[in-house]
Length: 96
Ligand SMILES: C[C@H](O)[C@H](O)[C@H]1CNC2=NC(N)=NC(=O)C2=N1
Image (cartoon, rainbow, N blue to C red; front, side, top):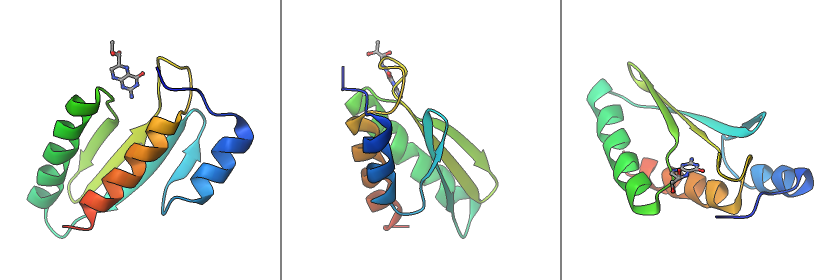
């Protein structure tokens, strides 16, 4: 299990991310797409990665808007893994 980050570590880590906001024990980002099916395709890639890493975000699709919420429920809060995956999701999004 990844280590739970302290409040200070979370503040620094979230400041280093683009467009991610802290929401309690979660970090959250909304990704906008030109078409509904692009968002769905993005979610499929994220889902594949989630299985590979055994770490699963909450995902919602609201037409062209995909919201990802990350936390490590096993650790009871945010971990390095959440921050690392947030960066990976952003890199994947660049391709859309
Ligand atoms: C048993 C299994 O390894 C765990 O439940 C994994 C699965 N996916 C997970 N995903 C997330 N986001 N947090 C977890 O703590 C987590 N734990």
